[in-house]
Image (tube, rainbow, N blue to C red):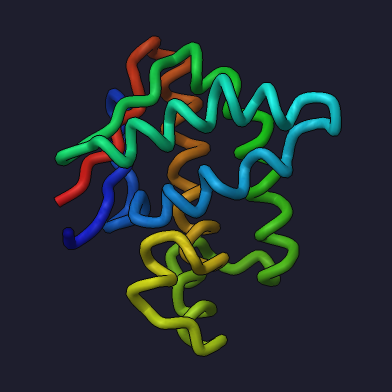
Amino acid sequence: MAGGYILCGEFSGDDKSGSAISGVFDALPKCVSEKEPKEFLRSVIAPLQESLEAAEDHILIDTDVALQLIGPVDQLYEQYGSELGNPEPINAPQIDEDRGLDPTDAKWGKGTGWQYYCLHDLRLAIRESIESDEPVVIHFD
């Protein structure tokens, strides 16, 4: 696969910004209150991860799930932004390479820079989903 693309309604994310979605899904449970991570993992993240594993070319994030994701996605985006020095999202993947991460591993979810890039567009797509009641699509080619 060349990359993942984030889409929703009129929103179309930047080139390959959805590629690191698996790493984002893995990191999101740490962004919910101490009482909620197990439930959030069970009811939100696990189904998304299962959908991702079974996907042939795309996954959908329905609006009801987008509503549950917006808080943790915003929090993780702010956290990574602070850790990375608030780079322009398009430049964040380069940080992973500069740190010596394997470019392929970084792109597909291991890199914080790639995850930050993904989170930027995911935040915008989630907001579009909430406003338009259309699902977020992460398409892989």
